[in-house]
Image (cartoon, rainbow, N blue to C red; front, side, top):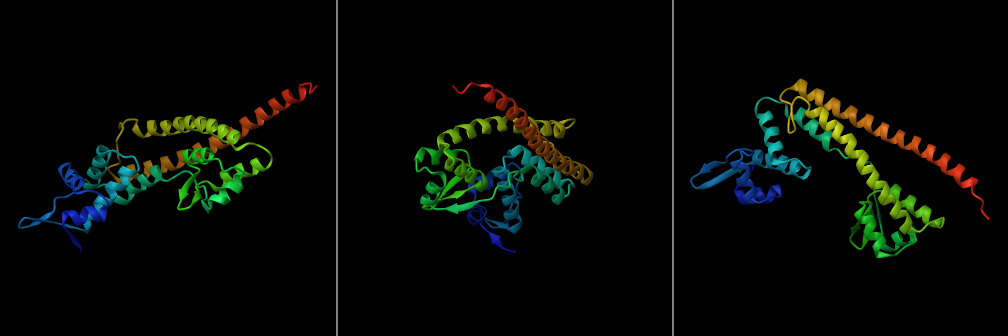
Length: 242
């Protein structure tokens, strides 16, 4: 088993020695063994640090991580608890990516306006990659490109997309808050399962809520589009073009 001094451990885990000591003080990380005045850490410490860092990056608080690790220490199955974490933090978006040159992006979107590219970055649709870009949502960006070829301005497309994003953020908040309320009911925020049956229930609940939420939101949007399309088409055709 590899042995580390604190500086080496922090470097391997992508954190700082201050954080290592802080996690020890909070009981999140086991104390090292001592050889004289030297503290010796092992791969077990490194694995624990990577779990802590991963949970922090995914939005968990130190208190939640403490509860999580406390549950593990008191008999909860690690794989089951991590299964819950994966369900909670697994990205819902399955958008495909694509690398593209700056000239390629300009040609695709019929625009080399830097402000348009900044908006796409702000929306999380593209990111800079060396001298070019990575399309983080290939289907959406290519759809925008096809619309520009039909005469729509990219500015208008981005304005509409921004409004839809805001509306979708509200829908997402409604769905996620409902799931959170179910998880917290009878337990309170920050609860983590402490045995296998609780873990299995929580994982299954989150998976099914994810599926139901996605299906419900998608189909509700399709129905709303059908209704509004019919309504606005009737209104459009009722107007006198002269």
